[in-house]
Image (tube, rainbow, N blue to C red):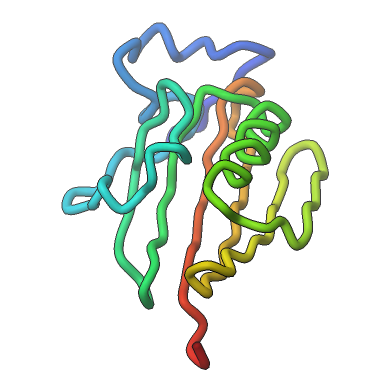
Length: 135
């Protein structure tokens, strides 16, 4: 297994200018992923959906983004407001952040987890939106 390292910006981004996968330890897109499941408002500019699948009336997705954890958290704070979500809780530790959400109009719960990559200006975002079993 090869490990990537970086100091500040993304040195391996020059090797793959077209996308994010394969840079900074970010995952390669999975075959069969359904990118249409992820609402466009949850995809920052230059984002790459590495995995997405339907799950319990919602979706689960992994998204590579050209943002630091802090930048991604700010992007998703604004995006979820526009998407009609209520923020239940936010936890930001700098190298990772989580948002827990509720969308009352559709009785859905959601979580957004942001994790740093081996480069400070790239992150992976996990989004999990489900309809609770007792709904």
